[in-house]
Amino acid sequence: MKPSLLPSNSSAVTTISEATVIRTDILTSKEALKKTLRLRLKIGEEFEYQPGDSVSVYCQNEEKEVEMLLKRLNVLDKADIICQIELMKDTKKAKAPIPLHIPTITTLRTLFTYNIDIREPPKKAVIRQLVEGTTNPQEKRRLQELCSKQGMGDYTSFIRNPEISILDLLLAFPSCNPDVDRLIESLPKLQPRPYSACSSPLKTPQHLDIAFNVINIPEGDGRSFARQGVCTGMLDRVTNQNQIREETTEDGTNTEIFQLQISARPNQYFRLPSDVSIPLILIGPGTGVAPFVGFLQHREMQKNSAEFADQAFGEIFLFFGCRNRSQDFLFKEELMRLQKVDILSKLYVSFSREAISQEDPKYVQDNIKSNAEQVLQLIYNQKAVIYVCGDAKNMAKDVNQTFMKILQEKKEMTESEAKSFITKMRLERRYLEDVWT
Image 1 (spheres, rainbow, N blue to C red):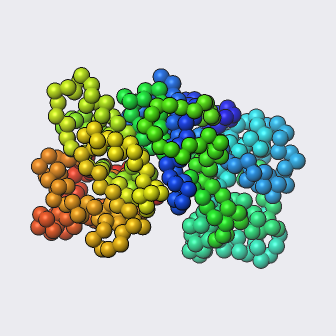
Image 2 (image 1 turned 30 degrees about the vertical axis):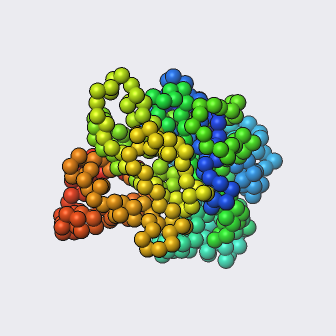
């Protein structure tokens, strides 16, 4: 990958490391609704992480999308000419620095590919710039509505929620010809994307695994063309010819596939307890299970080491959920193996598309409720730590509500008492979350 993926002019302390993709596994079947990939990265000795941490992957915008944007901005003929970025002398911002993510010597193609986020929904300030460059009265009026205070509802419904990009807007308003210089100044930095590590440095010190769903976004709702997620799409494309639809637990690798730039994102609030006797309750549907694979592998290595030879290890319950056992049961073989060797004490799996009766667990919270007695025994008698990873909007809230309900039903607490109990667990770092929207 090109050096321009590095943050330009950056004085930040983030250490960026080179990593090589050496293996790519497809963890889902061809019939699955989503495609999930596990990438194995070869890392250097300088790269340090712990289970529970995330890895930031520096990405690039899709070449075809950049080409379309440059063409729409009428600068395609100048896209590969080396240019110098500097502030206008007569600007009111004469003393302002050039944004750190903007290289001073570059080409427009490089800038829009590696440095600027062209996918994030434009802020209202950017839309105001588009108004200035629009000649058609009706288009101009509509853009004014979208960036007005009164048009907040429309902005949310038609721009933010459907994740409309700057290119979508320009294609929808053909008379708009914005100033490219001002767009470069106003569009945000292309940020690295974080992914949970799903491996243990004790088990594979030279390798690190990450897992993610490849995001596919259809055309429609204002989006002028179908697209993939910026980073997941990039990783899917560059590894496409080397993807294997077989999950194995072996350390075998492919040849070097692709060079990435990554940085560690330590998460001090989602780490294993230092006391290995403390039980763990792990809750992670879908790719939310990824960090827990790392947790379990770490516990396995600890249990097999001389350092912990005389220590008792706490039980580990894992609540996992997916749509269908034959399509998207992620890490199935590895989880079964870890259960067989007594690292994973209990594995509760819910299949949302296979639940026939109301008694069948559909989601992770259903299995938590069905096994409330065992769960509460770990929480009350053995001071277990709860870890929740995945969707913040629905799953994490539902799981929290489930714990509230079982405390009320099984421990005869009031709603206020149950809420206080969960709050106390959070303060004691016994109820930990790594969630996203």
